[in-house]
Structures are given as C-alpha cells and as structure tokens.
Image (cartoon, helix red, strand yellow):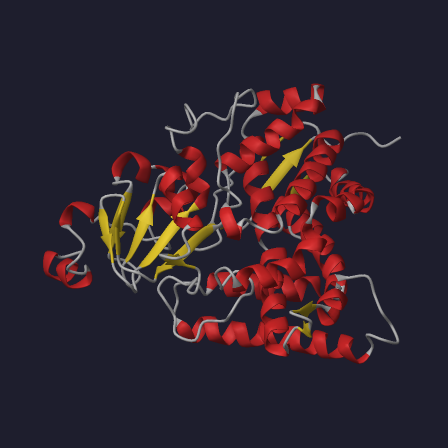
Length: 412
C-alpha cells in the first residue's frame, strides 16, 4: 500500500508504531497455511495493532488481552459482528447483545446446551458416529469434509433443533454462503441472510401451527413456548435466535473436526499412539482445539479508552482471533509443538466470559465420539497424494476439502 493511501486509511488516533498490514480474508500466507498465517502475527506484529485492510480495524494477538476484551462489554461490544462493519447486518441473539439483555436470551437456550442435556444425547450420537464412519471405512478413501465432518455434526444439530434432516445439503450450502460472503459487502451478506431468514420463518410458522396438536421435544418447540420476563419471545427475537443457531450448528464443528483430522493425517506417530491407547483421545481433542480453533470474534468499541498501550475510539472495530490464543508462547510453552502430554493447556477457542460459546459441551462431545470411531474403524491413514489445501478465512475459518486414503480393513 502506498504511503499516501495508508495515511488516509489510518485514523489520527492510531500511532504509526501500531500499524501492521494484515488482511484477514486475503493475506498471502492464508492461502498456504491459515493457522500459521495468524500465528506469525505473534512473532512479527505488536500485541495490539491496527490494519488498514477491510475498512481498518484493530487486531489482538495475545491471549490475556483477548480474554480481557471479550469480558469487557462496557468498552468492547458485540453489537457489530462484521468486519468491515455493515449497516443493517442481521441480528444474532444472544450473541449480538451485551449483558444484561444478553443474559435473558442465553437463559432461554442454556437448558438445551448444559452438561446434563448433552450427556443424555451421548448414546444416540455414539451410534450415529459409528454409522457415519462405517459408511466410508470400507472404501479406503473419502473427502473427510463432505463425507464425514459435514454430515455428522450437522445432522446431530438439525435433529436437536427440529430442522428437517432431508434439507441438510441445502442448509449446509446456505451456511457456507453466509460465511463466504463475509468481507464482500452488505449486498452479499444481505442476500444470503434473507434466504436464511425465509427458511427459519417458514419452519417457525409451521411449528407454531402444530405446537399444541403435535408437540415435539426439540429446540424449536422449546423456543416457541419459551418466555422472557413472563412473556413469549417476540417473533423477531425468536427468528434472530434461530438464525444464530443455524449458523453455529451448521458450520463450526465441521471446521474444527476437519482441521484436527488434517493435522492427524500428517502425524503417523500420533495415529499409532491413539490406536494403541484410546485413553489418550481426550488429550488429542484438547490439543487440537488449542491449535486449530476456527472462530474469530469481532468487537465494536463503544466508549473511548486507552488500554494495552493504544488509544481506542468509539466506532473502532476490533478482532480477537481466538484460535491463536492457544499459540501464545507466554501461555503455552512451545506452542507450535502438537503435544499430547502437555501438562497444562491454555486456550480461548470457545471464548470466555458472558459470551462463552453455548455449544462447547456439544462440540466437545461430537468431536470426542467421532475421533474415537475414526481411530477404531479407520486405523492409520494419510492425506491423498497431491492434496493442496484451500481455505475460507474471515470470521469462521474452514478447510474446504480433505481427501484422505487408508488401507480398508477386511470385512468378516
């Protein structure tokens, strides 16, 4: 970027020592290795820096600062979750609001996502994990993203919500289109948002008509009958909650699984260890979550303040790339090392504070059960010859395909 253009795109309150050029959608290294592109920021950029790309925004590279920011909703609000900021962006409840309003909506959803509710699902999810892995095991090859990582958690979530599972492909495509539109402008985001709103509206209206004659034990039925301050959830708020659940349930776990298995495919020594000793699987899960998170969380500065050695001004956008919190060498020694025997892991993959991800118990269960079945049924495996990764960067990061090969076991 030429010096004159750079000066125009950096606000006066940002000192030159805090400017570092990085494009969260198009950085050259993102095309080669997405997580490594972010991890390099901890070596090369200030702990908090301003990039002129995508309308200009702050970006944080250190775990302690991220944790402080995501807890401080008085200065750093979740009102805007788009970078660059988009006027009229869809409202996602409870994610898009701060306490105390946030707490009201979160309490409506919490019973479905707590440890007791998730534990009650385990037998059914285990059976489905066995089925999904068995569907590819005899082939000796698959595209892990489309054959396993998408249908498994997405189907589990669609059943939980009460979405029609025969629409899996349609709904999954819609979620991908929404995240692919990030960074492309208001028109693209608005168009796909309207499609999602239309789908959610039709489902809610259909279920409202039959809520008394055909009650069902799913999340849509629960939301339709839920109350806030003794009043039914308003229709627009109900739609906003379903919009958020749609995006979260149809994309994020798929991506976390895919990055984890891609990493495992390159580590035959860890594969052998997991096969010989499945008790190490929980450590594999947590180390994978430490190194290969997928959600970057934006914040809108709503009050002027001077923190972490920089000046924030009302209206500034800021990004906390939660996946690289686990790469912080002040929190995890030798963070680039994938270490199943790490004494203590520090990570912010599911955020922290009021906006701690509601689905973290579900995500961990799904990944744990899928990894167990994968190791048992597939055994040793590797990346298909000639594989070149293709990524989606931005707010929720993904691996677009993952071709794998293995020696299929003889069926008896």
